[in-house]
Image 1 (cartoon, helix red, strand yellow):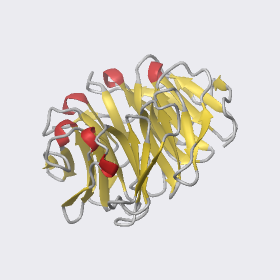
Image 2: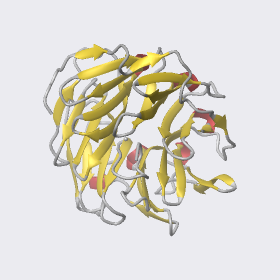
Image 3: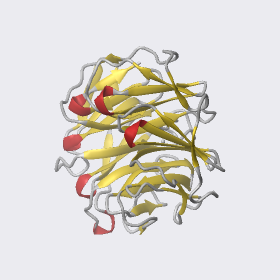
Image 4: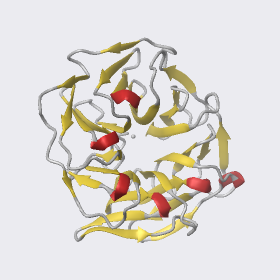
Length: 321
């Protein structure tokens, strides 16, 4: 998820490039450094929170049952209860415009919503091209009302609109073999990356055509992607693995055995987080991944850096540091 602005989540050669495990680079450290203190805060829902984002109005999280939560001075509160259509379709992915003023979210049965966090207005963009498949993730670039919108489909299709999701402006492409696209993130208006269920990573620089850039012999599923540049891509996956692309080669770090569902790293690689099963959370500092202590055993699904940093997960779990 990228660093085009402070509020963004995380705010091409070498097909089949060799994956090398780093020792002393992006390796797992045993020292408890820069992990911070994570505390559990009260959540107004017991539904799984699937994603979390930072906006100009504060942090928002999206959940099963079409629930959207907002972080306020008085704590977290529910601002949307049934998703963009009101039918309660679960929401799986979210992103914000470059100016932080619009929160976009996607989910089951073709759900797509655009929420004006300053005016409190929800716009329904669901079922583009009459598609009602499940949508796993979304990336948006550009300003509020003028966004490029990219939606990751469970059927292996990437749906996109260069006109803020307006009806009749949607197109799609199938970058890979048709396996579900699990995550999408963009570092520029039409430049970004996706990961799919076939253990593949794809890159684009026009928002429409995609080239495979890895990974050969990864042997784990990919769940999260943070696209910070054409030569700066992070991927989180099964078996506790985190992969990094520097433009010429992939390197990997093995944090343990938890499936890592999300990864967020700064552009200069100085700091970041990855989260996953069993309440596992790892912090990246000075090239080393260090496990942080968390007050939960619930599976964590997403993390966003900021003040505070926030991780969310199953059972309505919300952690802040």
